[in-house]
Image 1 (cartoon, rainbow, N blue to C red):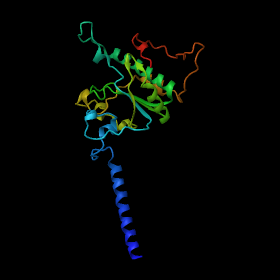
Image 2: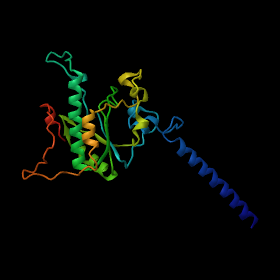
Image 3: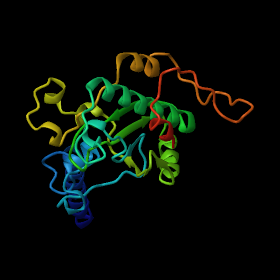
Image 4: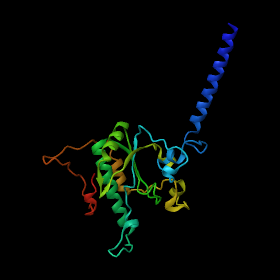
Length: 240
């Protein structure tokens, strides 16, 4: 009986140690103190080291958020003339191009897959963040279906690469210095520099109360468009 009690004490003590260790590992998961898992991938869903990173990139098996890798192309970074020289694009033209892109992607994804809580586009220049589009759906099932279907699609002449993202709180992912206009790293900062949409478009997409699912199709099989904003010829070919 005494031997049994002694074993029980050791067993309880061992259990307490394991619980404390598990609690500690959970508390540091995805932080700088975590020497196993990559904190940048956990916060941002991307890492500049990619597959060469010395820490683990734990890709989620379920999430509300998906990332469309390198989908947005800023015309100020890509516009060229026929002889290969850089073509000047004004800030007004860039904002119009971006608003058209944002509305097209947002509307298509919400109509096809479900309600979107938040969508953000990176304006960084680093290869692991440039043009990344993060879409947070209301339901994890919608995000999962979107990833499965979008990886078989093309957008604006490029194959779509979609995956589930660990990012759910974009406040932790964003560069606070950039938001205050003080980031000294520029486009190669390792935290998100999120490009804002125009105020009118934000009000149109987010400020109209409960969002509807897909609007009824016309007799031709196409969804009616409610918008009259002018689109560029290139943008009309951007649909998924």
